Length: 166
Image 1 (cartoon, rainbow, N blue to C red):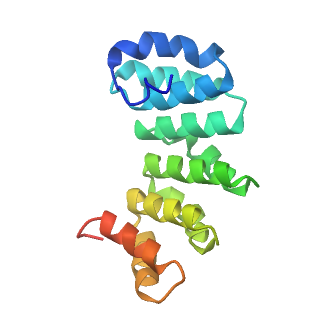
Image 2 (tube, rainbow, N blue to C red):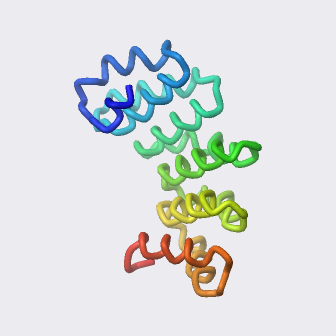
C-alpha cells in the first residue's frame, strides 16, 4: 500500500475505495492518505463516507486531513477536538490535518499549541496557522518570531515558508 501513496493516479480510485471501508486499520489509514493525493471528484465522496464510518481516532484524523485537502471543513470540529487527546501522535496528525483544511476558524485552537514544549507540535501548529491565513494568527507568529521566544526559530521558519506577505 505504501507504494501507492505518492502515485496520485486516478485509476486507483475504484480499488482504493473498496479497501477503505473493509481493510485492516493500517491499510485504511494508508488508503486515506493515498486518496488524498488523487485529484478526482469521486475521492471526496469516498472520503466523506469513510469519515462517517470511521471508529478509530487516528483513522478519523487522517481521513479528516484528507477531506481538508479537498477544502471540506466538516472534519474541522473533530480534528480540533483531538487536541485534547493525551497522545502526541494524534495531536500532530490533527494539527497537520487542520492545516490542510486551511480554515481561519482553526486558529483559536491552534494558537495555544505554540506554547507546547514539544518542538514537533509547535512546528506543525505554526505551519498549520500559516496555511489557515488568519491575519491575527499570522501577526502572533510574526511577533513571537522576533521576541526571543524559545521557539523563535520555529516561528521564523514558518514565517519564511509563508512567503513574503507573511
